Amino acid sequence: MSRKYYFKCTDCGAEFHDVSFMYLCPFCAAKNTQGQPPKGVLKTIYDFDELKNQSHKKDSFFTSQGWLPLLPINETKSLGHLAVGNTPLIPVSELNEQKLPFKLALKDDSRNPTFSFKDRASVLVSAYAKENNIDTIIAASTGNAGSSLAGICASQKQKAIICVPAAAPKAKLTQILMYGAQIVPVAGTYDDAFDLSVALTEKTGLFNRNTAYNPFTIEGKKTVSFELFTQYGNKAPDKVFVPVGDGVIISGVYKGFEDLLKLELIDKIPVIVAVQAEGSNNIVRNLYSDSFVSLPSKTVADSISVDIPRNYFMARRFLKKYQGETIEVSDSEILSASKSLSSNTGVFAEPAAATAFAGLLKQITEEKISANENVCVLLTGSGLKDVNAVQPVINIPEAVNPQEFLNDFRI
Image (tube, rainbow, N blue to C red; front, side):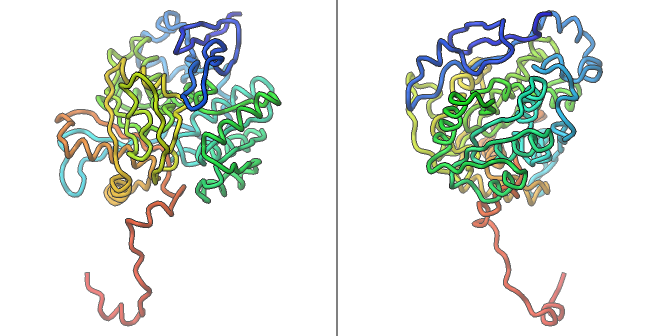
């Protein structure tokens, strides 16, 4: 029986049909150099001609089969019992008591089991591991991917090993440890933690979940686009704001819509807006450069703070091919957006997620959103992941004398 997918290198175009799994294209990976984004990231390709025969009725394809035909696993039960995905799409009609001239909705992925978008990738990697009798998975993380993998593995009776920068937020490190994973704090950056995890994989054969390095992380993340397709009534929104760090989330969003395009379920890709922090803009800043130059990252949005974007080349190709837009926002804009988002909608998002909302607010100010457009903001993590980051935009009142407060209180 032939496999339902194969791998294709996004750089040299080499195809690999006779393997069930591989990390990077061996031809391009062999040429990778220190300080540069890796080449050889693989795309997982399906038999879209055959799938089109199954999907000619838009209303039945996903509801009857789920997304299994477009995932590199064999059974949905391999995904385990945690409810990953199917997160709500929250309509927002006004901001700061001003009615919006376009149709805004928030895709709230903080509702996932470990409170972040990263569960989409972790659950698919874990499911593949389960089907292939792999019981230990390693990953590098600034916190969210690590806590996600730790939680998913705990539910699947698998072992997780997480390499993290020692400076990662305590809430995220706590979450990893509470799930029972082995944590390896690294004296250095996310990139140092990433390199260590890959070295351990090469030395021991441990299955590695790292974003971009493992092509199935993109396959997991693309499911958000399938959900948006169904939530928008079997069509794509007009514009989607996505927070960007290493380029994997935005590549997953693009890949999902591209799969739908190849199935002829949609006739165009939405305008995807890549929003990066000014202090960590190594994708947006290099997008139209002939050569990649990394600048050290420093931003309050730690989850998207990346010196060397691991999926730079794929994200760059998607943005160029489908005419995506880019925005940079300052840390002050991110924190202000986080407060505005919470007070206007009741959704408390971590700074990395609020970065996408900050991009929306910037485009509203610049009048770059057309009336009646269907606009979606992807919120990728809960604000409870990093409460310290938002302290500058809140003010906790001093304690009061209860009787004096009661006497003086007026509505």
